[in-house]
Structures are given as structure tokens and as C-alpha cells.
Image (cartoon, rainbow, N blue to C red; front, side, top):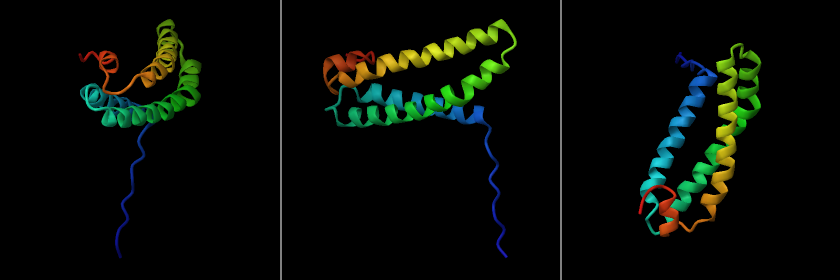
Length: 114
């Protein structure tokens, strides 16, 4: 009789940290691809957008409300509002990045590459 492997569930914070790391890696790849012909950068940008939408939805609908409710110190409340503001900035910046033509100097400049 074969034994079945039991998967250990990851905690929510570990999953969110893993998502953060994945998006950082994708952003690093996008920075490197910013001056390419555009194909790879466009594909990376689409992947990043999809990852961010899923990630931010989970944080905004589940994690942040629970954190805010549990926050008992002023510093915790400050962290909550900083996190919400970071998501707001992503919502503003992502459409601007999408407007650019991948491979153009303007697109590359958004990632510090010229």
C-alpha cells in the first residue's frame, strides 16, 4: 500500500511573502527586458499585472481588514494605512506603465534603464 504525502498548509503570511518575492523577481526581469524589442517586456508586464491583481485582492479583502481589526497599537494602525497607500500607488502607476511602448526609451526610463 502506497503512503500518501500529506501537504503541510502554509500560513497566509508565508504565502503573501512568497507572492511579494515573486513579483520582485518579475519586476527585476522586466527591468532587464525594458530595452528589448518589446515582446518579452510586454509579456512580463501582463504577468506582473495578473499577479498583482490576485495578490492585492487577497490583501485588501482578507488580510488588511483582519490586520486592522487586530491592530492594537498606533504603530500597527500606521502600518495598515501605509500598506493601503502602497496599493493605491500600484493602481495609479500600473496603467501608466501599460501605456508605454515596450522597448522604447520612455518605457525603459520608467525602470531606470536608459
